[in-house]
Length: 434
Ligand SMILES: O=C([O-])[C@@H](O)[C@@H](O)[C@H](O)[C@@H](O)C(=O)[O-]
Ligand SMILES: [Mg+2]
Image (cartoon, rainbow, N blue to C red; front, side):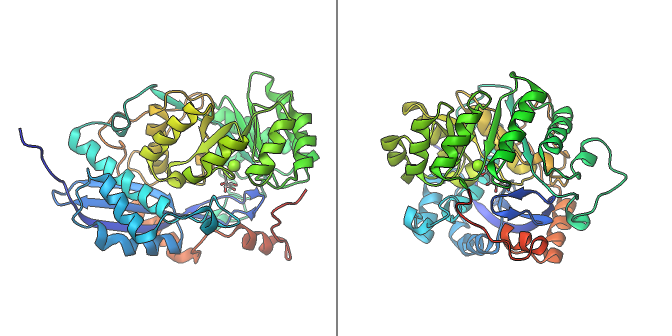
């Protein structure tokens, strides 16, 4: 029997969108009223559509545009060739290229992730298999996620910015409330867990001085008891000394401490001094970082993200490396919609182990871009879609509306410092604050 070729990429649609995002606080400042994503749709010569979603900004969109002519005509099964074409075009960003924010300065990984996921969606449709089967097959039917708490100002985001919608009910109402102290953080956690059933909880820290955030963690421990694993992520704003001091205080209550301090060397020092495992999505963020991570022991758990590690198959490779070198693996997230969530769920289902519930910002979003509407969570987990491909279809009306949001809102890249300065003039980001 002769093997077949194709289908081939005939059209590429790149659509920047802006999705409503509430005023969430973090170490870099404040979320804008809209978060930017880019939706990519590939259409093959036999009219099959494959979709993906990546973090958006003007540069990434321009790079996607620039790769269009290189990708038209490519066989969607030839992912190695497609990646090589993109490597030739953009090069592999080195640690030096990635500079002071190595987790962020990416072109190749985002673009290849967008193209790979859309191709896998098509391959799944052609073969009649869900994407998880293309990653080696399903190890579980449901994928567990963690509650992801944020300090925040009052407000719903989008047009409501810092205002609230009095008609909102349940979590939609709680999502608008301010959370600026331990009591409000516990209230946020209760509302989010009541809605989504999460069984573990992460707090985005790096907003207030460390003792306030540590007090919030103890308040969560008090409210939820020892059966609910807790994590806190100060996004590397603490010195080594601060990390050790507060890390030791939280040893009895934390499942893991995420990126307390900046860089692999500092993380390795903290790791030697405290008993709690350390997790990262900031110091070991690419394959190039792995050898030094292993040599010096900078973390226990790598928070992968297919958007940032170069796709779903690269994430499976990362899982193998983690297994070989005794690293735990979990998943990082940013504000996102259901196409990204579907891809995360297929990946999570294919991993041999999921020892830590994965991160997702999804509860903070109210928009959706898939025809089936927003994903539902049961006891914090999402069922793996069983239909061919990603198992989600693009809602073209929603795409048009969210693209119009993008055009209207005037944002072209994420800048949490600028957003914070609108509220607190003169506020500046500091890479080490406490
Ligand atoms: O959305 C945020 O504010 C987070 O701080 C995000 O930007 C981080 O990338 C991320 O969630 C993290 O775990 O560091
Ligand atoms: Mg993090």
